[in-house]
Length: 406
Picture 1: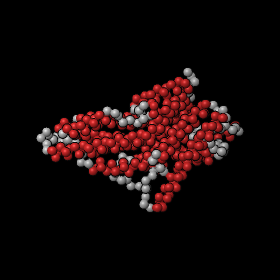
Picture 2: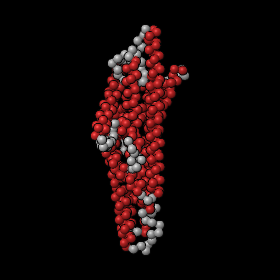
Picture 3: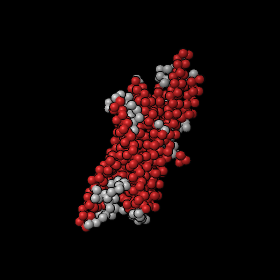
Picture 4: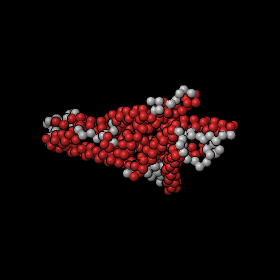
């Protein structure tokens, strides 16, 4: 599908949403392609729901049947992660968050139409950052799932050979522990086939739910930066006290237009915060427990060769969680920083050369920017880089409780 010149910021998230079947904008003028995409989208969503249901049922089976915690904890960790993915998708669709995409492309068109080189540079830098973030998230998720499946394939084949040689009935608890009403060892082809499907579903939805969130936050942050540039330069350097009344009134109108844009951005961020607050809170609350469940198996590694592959997998899984956590903390913190910087940018302009009415407007804007825009995590406050430290401290506490060696 061709990429529009006004979709450079959202091109990565758009591609992922199309692959995941959650793109809600017209994909083609051809009705046949549109219908096929609708069926594909429906199939992907059904598979996503079934994946979570089968994971949850298998976890219940393991708990009820009294399996060891070394087997239950990995399943519990995956259920937690997939539950977050499911919750994010439900929130995105319920609150129609993806409906803002046309506005994002419209705003990008205005950026490329601007004569200001600094604005374009800031926008391009944000595109580069989002590209790096997308590659980091996609790569770490891919390597983690690939290792999970690869290790599981070899381990399952070893169990099959062991059962044949000793006439045993040893179960396999590798890869995604999903409920399968068949003996996994005796029906190994069915087992591997379903694992390919679950690996694809788990990968694409995990990545797309994160990138949607990062893209929207980057969009908000970069337009706050653009507004800073426009506020700072709305009074030209050659403007002076002897300007005509008409010139002063023109500057007042320009400032009012910028204030209107500022109000629109504030409304956008506050609306998105209201619609996505449960996503942010969920990441903050559950990330500590997720990390603890990943680190505990790492602490149990005792140096045996067969534990090396598991150690590598858990290390990559930990990298996935850390990457996700730091990107959320960083992008949310950007909203706070850039919203507060608008007042400083306006103060650095030649606002004192304007008439009394315009100066009062400037002061009102500066006062408004003293109240930072933030992404809320409920009664925990705002999501910032400091919140990331709190999550890590919480994870450390959970690890001490869950680690049997303590």
